[in-house]
Image (cartoon, rainbow over all chains, first blue to last red; front, side, top):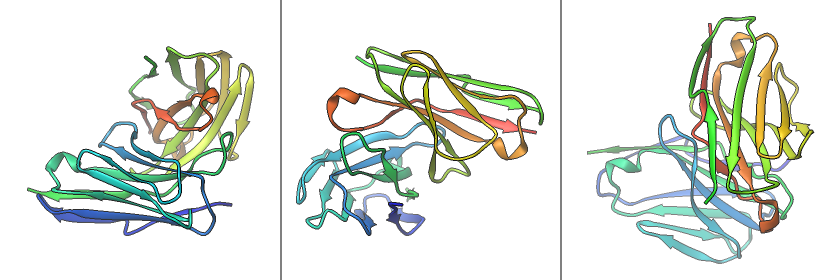
Length: 111
Length: 114
């Protein structure tokens, strides 16, 4: 089946630093999504990407849909303590297909 | 606007007891509905999804079942809980008519089986 790879499992950064997260797949996807899960809450959609090569920003977040359609990255600039959480990438092949999720990266931000 | 509600938020149950977790969606009709389980604060495992009333697809064999008695209601059940059923259960919905199965999640239900 399709799998999305996110590594490392955990990242530790200092407040104010930028951080980049990658998500890769051996198969192509036509939609890439990035979710963030705060502790004890459900994941919330951060950014959706619908076209290969697309670069989209949402405040301090920037995400790109890889040109090969097999990867995506998420950048967080000038991190703050509330950026703490689990970041999931997810891929969608077609309109009626189910989302494939990565295992997530747990981000910790030291004040 | 659309909202999704899950309850209870937290549940502690003894082994062998029954389970019922409920999820309702408001502000949309004919949604796709999903139940996920998240163990140990990590990956999301799809348990069930439904494209309509009474239509349930199971993704993994397990001790749980799902039902969709109404268009916007999705219920996760068990007749006898196991210790391994402990986890964080997330309900989600997507708009089938949008052309992309982007999920919106509920706030989750944390189940501890003792």
